[in-house]
Each structure stands twice: as structure tokens, then as C-alpha cells.
Length: 101
Image 1 (cartoon, rainbow, N blue to C red):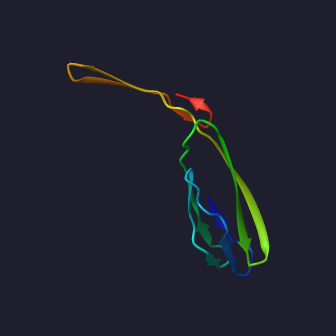
Image 2: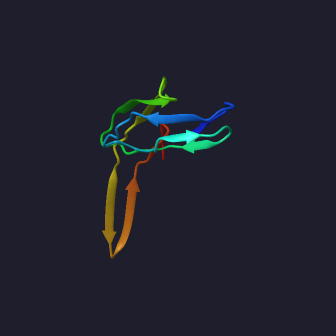
Image 3: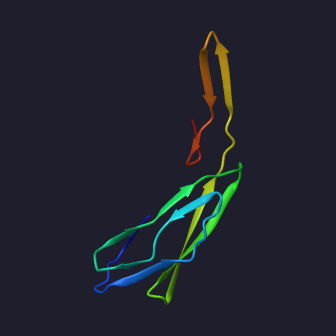
């Protein structure tokens, strides 16, 4: 996710989010000058086949609170192997953004 300072003065940004086993988060508090961009990374690692949801709160200039909601869907995976004379077949069910491949 990108955070852009479109103001004419610098702003400070902090986040109160505590990472979860299923959602990693990379962000350091920052002071952004006008026109600059800060990046924060989220890594979704579902552990069960279920719906996930988390609200992440950012604090701007120590006063204003901005909340975003992150949602994701964990899917069960089907992995099978077939060994015939050292030939392997891997069958994997993969779901990305609700589309199964």
C-alpha cells in the first residue's frame, strides 16, 4: 500500500497495528514531506479455509485516525502426488481473488 502526502506541509504517520499469524505487516513511523510516498507492506498468510478481516488504523500528525479494512479468503489446498518410475504429478487447487485455478 502507498501513502502519499498531497499536502503542502510535512505530515507524520504512525500505525497501531499488531501483526497477526495470518497477516504480516511492514511499516515504520515516518515523517513525509510534501509529494513524497511511504510504502507499507501486508503479507496475507491464511491458516484456515475461512474469511479473514482486519481493521488497520493509521495515525496522522498524532491526532487524526484513518482506518482501512483488509479482507481475504483462505482456501483449502488439495495436494496429491503420483510416483511412477520417479515421475511426479502435482495437483494443486489454487484460488486467487476468488478465482480457482
